[in-house]
Length: 244
Image (tube, rainbow, N blue to C red; front, side, top):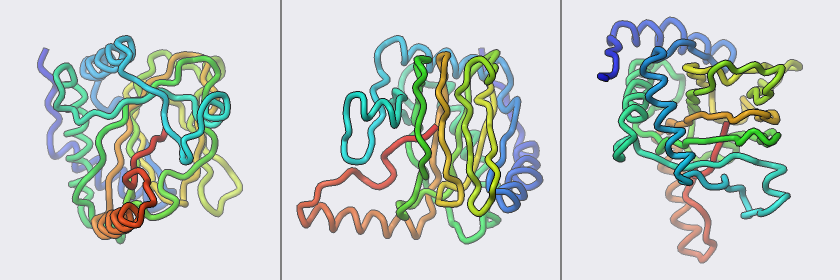
Protein backbone atom coordinates (compact mmCIF):
# COMPACT_ATOMS: atom_id res chain seq x y z
CA UNK A 1 0.00 0.00 0.00
CA UNK A 2 1.53 3.37 -0.96
CA UNK A 3 2.40 5.70 1.89
CA UNK A 4 0.16 8.73 2.11
CA UNK A 5 1.33 12.07 0.76
CA UNK A 6 1.79 14.90 3.23
CA UNK A 7 1.75 18.30 1.55
CA UNK A 8 4.48 20.87 2.06
CA UNK A 9 1.85 23.43 3.08
CA UNK A 10 0.60 21.11 5.85
CA UNK A 11 4.13 20.58 7.11
CA UNK A 12 4.93 24.28 6.88
CA UNK A 13 1.89 25.06 9.00
CA UNK A 14 2.98 22.51 11.62
CA UNK A 15 6.56 23.81 11.61
CA UNK A 16 5.82 27.53 11.82
CA UNK A 17 2.56 27.60 13.77
CA UNK A 18 3.18 24.79 16.25
CA UNK A 19 6.74 23.49 16.51
CA UNK A 20 8.74 26.74 16.45
CA UNK A 21 6.52 28.68 18.89
CA UNK A 22 6.25 25.78 21.35
CA UNK A 23 9.98 25.04 21.32
CA UNK A 24 10.74 28.66 22.10
CA UNK A 25 7.95 29.05 24.66
CA UNK A 26 8.24 25.82 26.67
CA UNK A 27 11.10 23.82 25.11
CA UNK A 28 9.06 20.94 23.70
CA UNK A 29 6.18 20.19 21.36
CA UNK A 30 4.21 17.12 20.34
CA UNK A 31 2.02 16.38 17.33
CA UNK A 32 -0.67 13.70 17.43
CA UNK A 33 -1.98 11.68 14.46
CA UNK A 34 1.25 12.59 12.69
CA UNK A 35 1.33 10.06 9.84
CA UNK A 36 -2.16 8.58 10.14
CA UNK A 37 -3.09 5.07 11.21
CA UNK A 38 -2.32 3.28 7.95
CA UNK A 39 1.23 4.62 7.64
CA UNK A 40 1.83 4.40 11.39
CA UNK A 41 0.83 0.73 11.25
CA UNK A 42 3.45 0.17 8.53
CA UNK A 43 6.16 1.69 10.73
CA UNK A 44 4.99 -0.32 13.74
CA UNK A 45 5.03 -3.57 11.77
CA UNK A 46 8.60 -2.97 10.64
CA UNK A 47 9.72 -2.16 14.18
CA UNK A 48 8.02 -5.29 15.54
CA UNK A 49 9.73 -7.35 12.85
CA UNK A 50 13.12 -6.01 13.94
CA UNK A 51 12.32 -6.83 17.54
CA UNK A 52 11.14 -10.38 16.86
CA UNK A 53 14.20 -11.08 14.70
CA UNK A 54 16.57 -10.24 17.56
CA UNK A 55 17.97 -7.11 15.89
CA UNK A 56 17.54 -4.97 19.03
CA UNK A 57 20.38 -5.03 21.57
CA UNK A 58 20.81 -3.56 25.05
CA UNK A 59 21.27 0.21 25.01
CA UNK A 60 24.69 1.46 26.12
CA UNK A 61 25.71 3.74 28.96
CA UNK A 62 28.84 5.78 29.56
CA UNK A 63 31.43 3.55 31.19
CA UNK A 64 29.94 0.41 29.58
CA UNK A 65 28.12 -0.66 32.74
CA UNK A 66 26.62 -4.13 32.46
CA UNK A 67 24.18 -6.47 34.18
CA UNK A 68 21.78 -5.34 36.87
CA UNK A 69 23.46 -1.94 37.25
CA UNK A 70 22.96 -1.15 33.56
CA UNK A 71 19.39 -2.47 33.47
CA UNK A 72 18.47 -0.42 36.57
CA UNK A 73 19.64 2.76 34.85
CA UNK A 74 18.55 1.98 31.33
CA UNK A 75 16.40 -0.99 30.32
CA UNK A 76 15.75 -0.48 26.61
CA UNK A 77 16.86 -2.55 23.63
CA UNK A 78 17.88 -0.63 20.52
CA UNK A 79 19.09 -0.74 16.93
CA UNK A 80 20.32 2.02 14.61
CA UNK A 81 18.82 2.35 11.12
CA UNK A 82 19.14 4.72 8.19
CA UNK A 83 15.70 3.90 6.78
CA UNK A 84 17.21 2.75 3.49
CA UNK A 85 17.60 -0.88 4.60
CA UNK A 86 15.42 -3.55 3.05
CA UNK A 87 12.22 -3.86 5.05
CA UNK A 88 12.57 -0.36 6.54
CA UNK A 89 10.75 1.62 3.85
CA UNK A 90 8.06 2.99 6.17
CA UNK A 91 10.70 4.01 8.69
CA UNK A 92 12.53 5.80 5.88
CA UNK A 93 9.35 7.63 4.94
CA UNK A 94 8.82 8.72 8.55
CA UNK A 95 12.38 10.08 8.69
CA UNK A 96 11.91 11.95 5.41
CA UNK A 97 8.79 13.68 6.78
CA UNK A 98 10.57 14.70 10.01
CA UNK A 99 13.50 15.96 7.91
CA UNK A 100 11.12 18.14 5.91
CA UNK A 101 9.63 19.54 9.12
CA UNK A 102 13.03 20.53 10.48
CA UNK A 103 14.05 22.10 7.14
CA UNK A 104 10.84 24.14 7.16
CA UNK A 105 11.68 25.42 10.65
CA UNK A 106 14.72 26.93 8.92
CA UNK A 107 16.50 29.73 10.72
CA UNK A 108 13.75 30.01 13.32
CA UNK A 109 15.45 27.54 15.68
CA UNK A 110 17.34 30.28 17.47
CA UNK A 111 21.11 30.01 17.28
CA UNK A 112 21.05 26.61 15.61
CA UNK A 113 21.94 25.87 12.00
CA UNK A 114 20.90 22.30 11.19
CA UNK A 115 22.67 20.52 8.33
CA UNK A 116 22.55 16.86 9.37
CA UNK A 117 21.09 14.37 11.80
CA UNK A 118 21.86 11.04 13.41
CA UNK A 119 20.69 7.66 12.25
CA UNK A 120 17.37 6.66 13.76
CA UNK A 121 17.34 4.70 16.99
CA UNK A 122 14.65 2.03 17.15
CA UNK A 123 13.94 1.28 20.81
CA UNK A 124 11.88 -1.20 22.80
CA UNK A 125 11.23 -1.34 26.53
CA UNK A 126 10.19 -4.98 26.98
CA UNK A 127 7.46 -4.41 29.56
CA UNK A 128 9.25 -5.84 32.60
CA UNK A 129 9.30 -2.58 34.54
CA UNK A 130 12.36 -1.26 32.72
CA UNK A 131 12.82 2.47 32.25
CA UNK A 132 15.58 5.03 31.80
CA UNK A 133 16.74 7.21 34.69
CA UNK A 134 16.76 10.99 34.50
CA UNK A 135 19.33 12.23 31.99
CA UNK A 136 20.11 14.86 29.37
CA UNK A 137 20.61 13.82 25.75
CA UNK A 138 23.38 16.34 25.09
CA UNK A 139 24.97 17.52 28.35
CA UNK A 140 28.45 18.14 26.95
CA UNK A 141 28.09 19.83 23.56
CA UNK A 142 28.12 16.85 21.17
CA UNK A 143 26.13 18.79 18.55
CA UNK A 144 22.62 17.48 19.11
CA UNK A 145 20.14 20.33 19.33
CA UNK A 146 16.67 18.85 18.66
CA UNK A 147 15.46 15.42 19.78
CA UNK A 148 12.53 13.91 17.82
CA UNK A 149 10.74 10.82 19.13
CA UNK A 150 7.99 8.98 17.25
CA UNK A 151 5.86 6.68 19.43
CA UNK A 152 4.22 3.46 18.27
CA UNK A 153 2.08 2.18 21.14
CA UNK A 154 -1.57 1.45 20.47
CA UNK A 155 -4.16 1.54 23.25
CA UNK A 156 -1.56 2.81 25.71
CA UNK A 157 -2.86 3.67 29.18
CA UNK A 158 -0.15 5.17 31.36
CA UNK A 159 -2.11 4.38 34.54
CA UNK A 160 -1.77 0.69 33.65
CA UNK A 161 1.28 0.50 31.42
CA UNK A 162 3.45 3.29 32.87
CA UNK A 163 6.20 4.26 30.46
CA UNK A 164 5.59 8.01 30.31
CA UNK A 165 8.39 10.34 29.30
CA UNK A 166 8.74 12.80 32.16
CA UNK A 167 10.42 16.10 31.28
CA UNK A 168 11.84 18.39 33.98
CA UNK A 169 12.03 21.80 32.23
CA UNK A 170 15.06 23.77 33.34
CA UNK A 171 14.30 26.35 36.01
CA UNK A 172 10.76 25.09 36.61
CA UNK A 173 9.32 23.42 39.69
CA UNK A 174 6.95 21.23 37.70
CA UNK A 175 7.42 18.18 35.49
CA UNK A 176 5.59 17.33 32.28
CA UNK A 177 4.43 13.80 31.46
CA UNK A 178 4.22 12.76 27.80
CA UNK A 179 2.40 9.50 27.10
CA UNK A 180 4.05 7.38 24.36
CA UNK A 181 0.88 7.21 22.27
CA UNK A 182 0.69 5.65 18.81
CA UNK A 183 1.46 8.10 15.97
CA UNK A 184 2.63 10.87 18.33
CA UNK A 185 5.76 12.86 17.39
CA UNK A 186 7.56 14.63 20.25
CA UNK A 187 10.25 17.28 19.72
CA UNK A 188 12.38 18.98 22.38
CA UNK A 189 15.70 20.76 22.83
CA UNK A 190 18.40 18.15 23.40
CA UNK A 191 20.56 20.13 25.83
CA UNK A 192 20.36 20.77 29.58
CA UNK A 193 17.06 22.62 29.24
CA UNK A 194 15.23 19.29 29.15
CA UNK A 195 16.35 16.65 31.65
CA UNK A 196 13.99 13.71 31.24
CA UNK A 197 13.36 10.11 32.19
CA UNK A 198 11.34 7.13 31.01
CA UNK A 199 9.28 5.78 33.86
CA UNK A 200 8.99 1.99 34.30
CA UNK A 201 7.08 0.33 31.46
CA UNK A 202 4.80 -2.63 32.16
CA UNK A 203 3.89 -3.35 28.55
CA UNK A 204 6.06 -3.56 25.44
CA UNK A 205 6.85 0.02 24.45
CA UNK A 206 8.20 1.04 21.02
CA UNK A 207 9.64 4.32 19.77
CA UNK A 208 11.96 5.72 17.11
CA UNK A 209 14.31 8.60 17.98
CA UNK A 210 16.42 10.84 15.78
CA UNK A 211 18.64 13.79 16.71
CA UNK A 212 19.34 16.89 14.62
CA UNK A 213 22.77 18.52 14.87
CA UNK A 214 23.83 22.14 15.03
CA UNK A 215 26.58 22.43 12.41
CA UNK A 216 29.07 24.46 14.44
CA UNK A 217 28.76 22.50 17.68
CA UNK A 218 28.90 19.21 15.76
CA UNK A 219 32.12 20.19 14.00
CA UNK A 220 33.70 21.16 17.32
CA UNK A 221 32.61 17.87 18.90
CA UNK A 222 34.08 15.85 16.04
CA UNK A 223 37.39 17.67 16.35
CA UNK A 224 37.46 16.99 20.09
CA UNK A 225 36.65 13.31 19.47
CA UNK A 226 39.43 13.05 16.90
CA UNK A 227 41.94 14.60 19.30
CA UNK A 228 40.93 12.29 22.15
CA UNK A 229 41.37 9.21 19.98
CA UNK A 230 44.71 10.48 18.73
CA UNK A 231 45.87 10.78 22.34
CA UNK A 232 44.84 7.18 23.03
CA UNK A 233 41.71 7.95 25.03
CA UNK A 234 39.26 5.80 23.12
CA UNK A 235 35.65 6.90 23.23
CA UNK A 236 32.48 6.53 21.20
CA UNK A 237 31.72 9.09 18.50
CA UNK A 238 29.78 12.07 19.90
CA UNK A 239 26.03 11.58 20.01
CA UNK A 240 25.99 7.78 19.81
CA UNK A 241 23.83 6.92 22.74
CA UNK A 242 20.13 6.61 23.25
CA UNK A 243 17.04 8.22 24.60
CA UNK A 244 13.38 7.63 25.10
